[in-house]
Length: 83
Image (cartoon, rainbow, N blue to C red; front, side, top):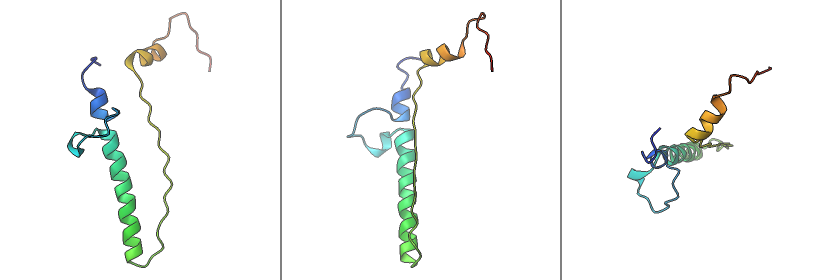
């Protein structure tokens, strides 16, 4: 990957809190979509007199830099892996 090619901006891992929706990266858009869907389902259930569903969300995000990834993937020929 090329340095300065906009990966952080595209993914949305920057720390700019005053950004317009059109400039959000894929991660903030996905999180927003998830919580919007949950809220819509809760509202529909309430309007229809059904029990309001509860949701539990676990999420993790890991940003791996190319240099770190190559460190783990490229092993010296002398290293013998035992499983």
